[in-house]
Image 1 (cartoon, rainbow, N blue to C red):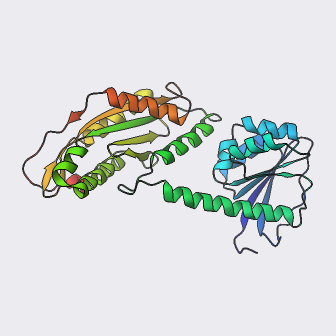
Image 2: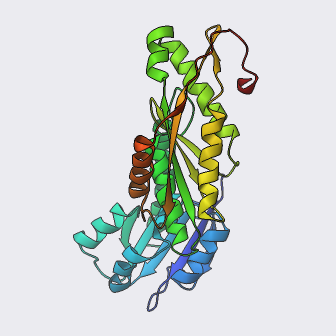
Image 3: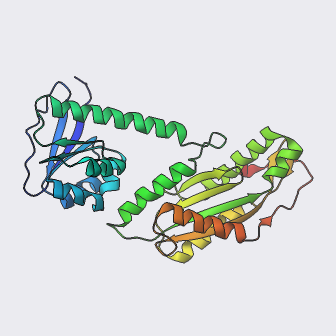
Length: 304
């Protein structure tokens, strides 16, 4: 038995009843909470953290889970299991797994041993998935989330916006001058320059905003909530201005040129990939500003 108590949300759809899971099972211990329907479950998920969610549903209702607005959120952090009253079939089970469901099991499963075991193993698999994602989700040069992690984060946020509509924006930042810095100063100096760019971007936004690396010469900033569409443009202008002063690199000063593009949700796209394409396209077509090269070596106080 694990010494850590796992919080499990049990959700019942119409026409079903969940098996009586023993909180002190050999695969527990579990702290069990019950939601009478999916709407209540969605509200609980927005307010509380759970290690696992078990949804009991007839097969026809299990298929409706595919369009449940809170499905992405339910499958993102907790381990999600679905119990059905009859055989769901390979197609439905596969579709549910592709949506993030850990397992699809019969509602008749033994609640004394088999179901607690399935819950515990699903929680452990989810934990390992998170560790693997974290290990592969960081740009090693800057310590920022990479593009894959950014897209995942944006899609999770969009899933929440489907229930709680609110504007948000994605800013793409294109940087010119990194290739020249590498050619003139070497790869390590170019990496130092990228890290200093990342610091200025991070300092220039709120703690709730997400700064990510899009590759060797591009970054992105996710603004999860904006009061007015013009606010995102103001943030982009602020970030471009923050990157214009030269950076202290290898005993001298190196400047870069910057161009930004802004995509608004939902006007410019309703999924992460579309928003990123829009923002990156605007950044690519915008003229880069800056890169007045400084010749006098000096310390750059903005990077300390």
